[in-house]
View: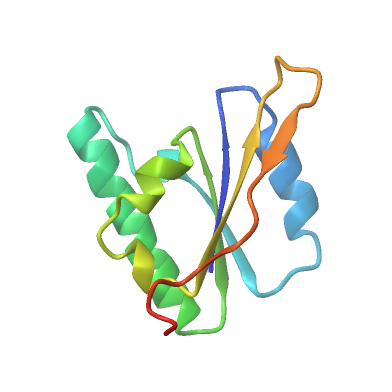
Length: 112
């Protein structure tokens, strides 16, 4: 499963992630900046790499927590996203009074 923790710079993604991963041995956390993107094309190619990474981790029984500025739509546009066991997203918005908006888990498109 791929968990997307999305938000603008300085919205608190790393702070939230530190709390989420405490004591969880089946969750691998990564920041999208680990693979630099300089254009929209490389950004989408990188998202596809993260989906591939999540699929590799799933095979080992590990979920991926991806910290990114990318919106959920970019993840869903990845051709292999439907192969994931599930996708869940949370948007951090440090400017609003509510702060966090999360989507429920989206099951795999191949679970029929």
